[in-house]
Image (cartoon, rainbow, N blue to C red; front, side, top):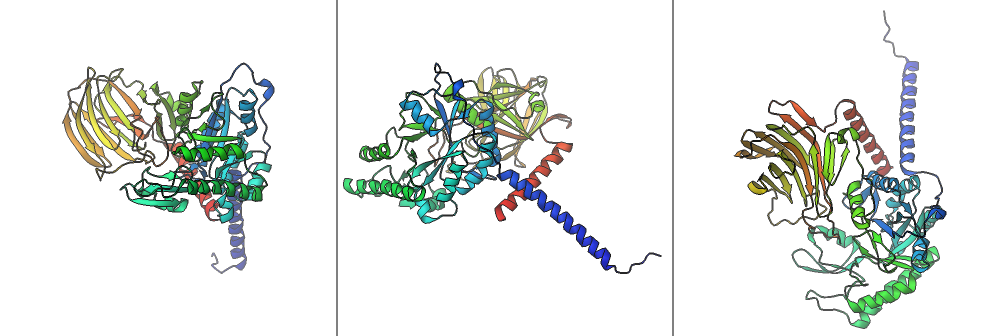
Length: 560
């Protein structure tokens, strides 16, 4: 007979086993965290002996606002940053230094045909932590920009002077500055209420109630609600002079020198301010203190014809796909670009008509051409007629995502279900003419204005049988058995299209759009599967485990 007598030794063995198991789990997590954050190597410059003096392609500048482990609406995630920098590396881009840029303009130094100048703005501590391993892995050199007043305020979110010097010592970083402070003047909210001057914290707190009616501290006179200057020329000059003097004093004290690279925030004016007299004062200080100035945003390419004090940079937004960035660079440089495909087996089911598609996990990211479309054809769908289609449209609200049914080669004869700028429409195309047979604005507030960075997510279910079409949005039927005249067999196409520049609180003019089709599935009317991008079997298990592991690592990084 088995004894149920309590055994202290057995209990001790269980404790020891549990302790060993917990220790192993903690060690595995610690190794994962260290691998996620750290790497140990030395930057190796490009081989200048292989650079041709007979070819001048200029250089591109890519500048990130900041980096976060998981990302948000401003800071890019480490995963997306890794994907973008890897793609640039695979396309042959090598980083150049500040000295290379100065020598290019002042001494005519030849640069590699694919030269990249890499910037990270605002001097955030998390940016340095999360980008360090990535730039080391791809042997990239970058410039970290900071605000001088952050040293005086000792804000823990930003790098200290000692940490900046450690970055420089790592060999992968150079230093630059965004100026003395990040503050805003002449601020109005979206209802035209005058808010006056706001520091960066106040600005962030009020962001949801504002549009683009504001200016940077150094860009203009301080004005009242009637746009009348509240300061004289001498007062304005003294205010701007004081900022540059304070900047010089703080950097000299903290790191023994003033950084030689400057990025004048919110300029993009063709000069150094939105007012001529303000521009003159900024210009004097910029040329006195710095070797170069990034004065513009929106385009990546700088050429020998550019001014070293009027350089431009492209600022990838946190929601951009890798192909989005590559498409923008292609449009600027006209150089050959190898785009990212992702899952090649899934890609083989489609034909790219225009734009570029990336197949990642259970999503299809269809990137449009600049001011154009991305069009993707599902192969072997020419004979489809009566079908059910379901997907989740995860592209940003401003832009267009479309699904073509019963389409001929150029979609001039087709049925199209399109979500554009939060309006869902059913369009029947016949012999090149378009007829909107249904349209519904999905906005709760018809006066609502969307920022181009506002993400979207709409589950769309389409049923097309004979001469009737029905649509459900987010589980609710919005169109039932609408009559259609196109009863032909035809192909399935996906489309993404740039909708408009849209409202933006940032100074962004982006003419490329990412249509995002998640869990794209097609069946016949009897629910027999014709196509499905969803993950299945082992792939689904691996995807879930990867996401679970990432969440655990994110938790440890955030709270430990």
